[in-house]
Structures are given as C-alpha cells and as structure tokens.
Length: 143
Length: 143
DNA sequence: GCCTTTCGTTTACAATTGTCAACAGAACAG
DNA sequence: CTGTTCTGTTGACAATTGTAAACGAAAGGC
Image (cartoon, rainbow over all chains, first blue to last red; front, side, top):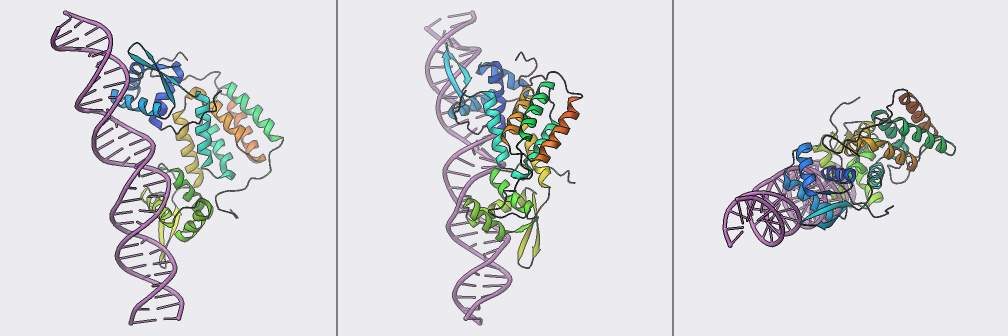
C-alpha cells in the first residue's frame, strides 16, 4: 500500500499516531482532548508532537476551514511491522525465536490471530533450518 | 534469574551488550576491536557506550590487572523480552497479533523455535478470546 | 630511567525526545 | 468594532543518543 520510508517514531508520537489511525484522521482538537484525557499531556505537548510528525512525513495536513485535518501517510500495519522489525534487527539472530516465544506467551491473542500464526508456522516448518547462527560477533562466533 | 529493572538500551548500546553476552564478559579491548571491525566505530565511541551502560547498571566491572572485565547484569533473554514487550506496549492491543504474524513471517526460525511456538499457541488457543478490543482511544472505541 | 602504548576518565557537540509557554492571526460573540 | 477564543507557529530547555577528541595514569620496551 505504501512502501514509503517509515521514520523512527518515538513512544509519545506513537500515542498520537494511534489515534489518527484509529479515527482515520483527526483534528488537533480531538487529539488534544483525548490525549489530555489519556495521558494528561498539555495542549502544547500534543501540538509539538503533531508538528514533529508532520516534519517527519508521518502525517499530512489538509486545511478545512480554519483548522487542519491530520492524516497518516503510512498505514498502521506498515508502521507497526517496520518498527517491530527494526527492533528485531538489534537482537541476536539466533535468539529471535525465543523472543517471539515470549511475545506470544505474553500477548493477548484472538482465536483468529492464533489460527493465522499457526498456519504461517506450519508453512515455515517445511523449510526451516535446524539451527541458526549467532551474528553478534564480527566473523566467527563460538557461542 | 534477574528481575532487575532493564533500562532502555539504545541500538548502539545493544551492539555492545550482544558481544558481552555472547562472550560471557569481555574487556574493552575485545569490544573495541570487534566493533571497529563490525561497525567502524572509533575506540572512543565504544568507551563512551561502555561508560553509559555501566551508569545504567547494565554492565558491571571487575578490575583485572590494569583493565576491567565487563559483565552483563541481566541475562540476554531478559533484556530482549523486556525490550520487545516495551515496544508492543506502543502498539494497539487489537493489532498486536498481526504484528506478531509479520515478525514470524519475516524472521528466520529454527525447527526448534517453530515447535516451541506451535506448542505455546496450541496452549493459548484453549482460552483465547474471539475478539480483542482496541485501546488506542481514551474510553470508547468504534474502530 | 625515559618514551610509547594502553586503559580509563573528562569534555564536547549536534540531533532527538519529552514537556511546555508564549505569541500571532482568524473567527466569533456581543 | 473590540475583546475572547481557537488554532497553528516559534522558541525553550533538560535528558538521551551517536560520535569522538583530549587528557592522565600505569605498564612495558629498550
């Protein structure tokens, strides 16, 4: 849908983006009200986050009367996947599986999520390697 | 093993920690050599990262002769899990499953990883809810 | 015993992030 | 028309992060 580069989104910015995605676009008033409610942020704080997200190209604005409508430029799933993958890049290749296991164990998943994961795993099992190499050290790794 | 608080670890710091974990402790010389090799970082950069990790309580030092041996204060899996869970905290509860699916699809997993994930999923399937609520908006959510 | 190498410590500096206050222009109320 | 209210723009400031130079003490080489 959009192969646009997803900039790094800070936790505070995520909070803003989530509302924009969920409501499929929002006005600063909406965001200020909701985040004041949810996070006790001042109006200024929300405005700053909006400005930064626009600068990062994560949000785009359309003037409507006197105010702006803020819309996301990338889909929520794209952003989530990109961010999750970036985090996994930091982890040892050999141990990503156990981290996934921990996430699966600690995340509330719906029946549908579980079914989808099971299907994907069954598919991957057909060609998965027996063992994965650690990539923490420059060349050789005797871990 | 260690329920110590895991501080936020930046990507550059992760790179250092990975080596310390993999080698089960290391000297600054080892780290400088390897990271110069792997990331082209200057010796100073590595030293700064070590200092910061010690300040954050992620590494502890033991004097050996003239130099220090750096050891991790938390296990690699604890750190990885904590960080992954922190990231998931930023994501909409309703959509974490699809992010996990993306990760599973894009991560190279071993046969053992897959088997463990399948077992865990089968277990969770027994009590998983049909649907999960979005938690992006303050109270009500009509997403 | 000096000079050089090796470590760790201090200092630096720009960019990003979390949090806001202050200000300016437009719209609205009276 | 004039003061109040909205909304967006600027400026701020401390903490964190990426990157690194400079300095000081100790060890080893010759």
